Amino acid sequence: MATKVFINLPVKELNRSMDFFTALGFSFNPQFTDEKAACMVVSESIYVMLLTESYFQTFTRKSIANATQSTEVLIALDAASRDEAKQMISKAQSLGAQIYAEPQDHGWMYQHSFADLDGHQWEFVYMDESQLPNQE
Image (cartoon, rainbow, N blue to C red):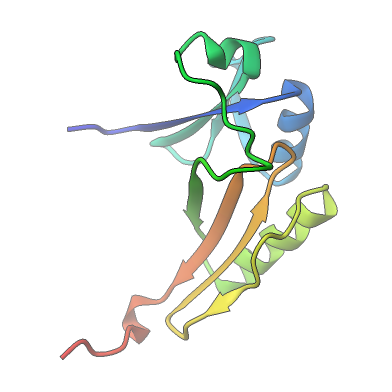
């Protein structure tokens, strides 16, 4: 069974993307980072490989989606609290990200979203399962 997740995303300007995600609080594993790719550490088991578009293209025969015009993936990460989710979205927006959806508060779950500098869509979600409505 898989123990790690690697999400691969094409980016137009690797250094710009690294600066953006570093400012959001993410770190990069230097062992897997060079001029073509950067390994962003999300957790001990989740990594996002930011790949230059030309390098990304070597892994697929399909054309690369323009994430500013079509959705290829929604990346949802958990937050420790509603406030943390709100802070991440606010910080991302201040760094140039675009808000593409209004926040949703379902009582037991709060989520808010942004599109990064390349248009990839990210969500930060806080869930309090103890507040989940009874499903009986």
